[in-house]
Amino acid sequence: MDRLTVFGLFAVTAMLVFYALEGRSHWFTLAFAFACALGSTYGFLQGAWPFGLVEGVWTFVALDKWRRLSRSPPAA
Picture (cartoon, rainbow, N blue to C red):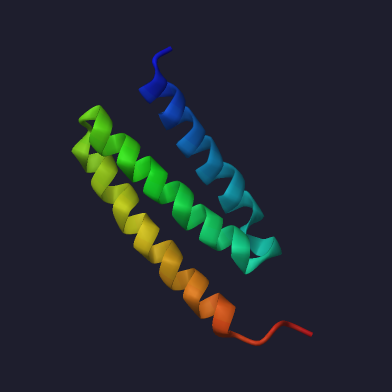
């Protein structure tokens, strides 16, 4: 396994883990956004630009969700 493949495996695994934990804290949503950015970077570096593009979109979707969650009052 080369370094790029290991990086991609790390990025996609982090996305899965943080997506599963999103309901616990809005900080996991931010971590998911960061992992999506890593996944996007991997896609472009690998030459799979459609994957990189879609993961880039998911980065902004997750950032918007985090922004909305961080501004809402905590549930009682």
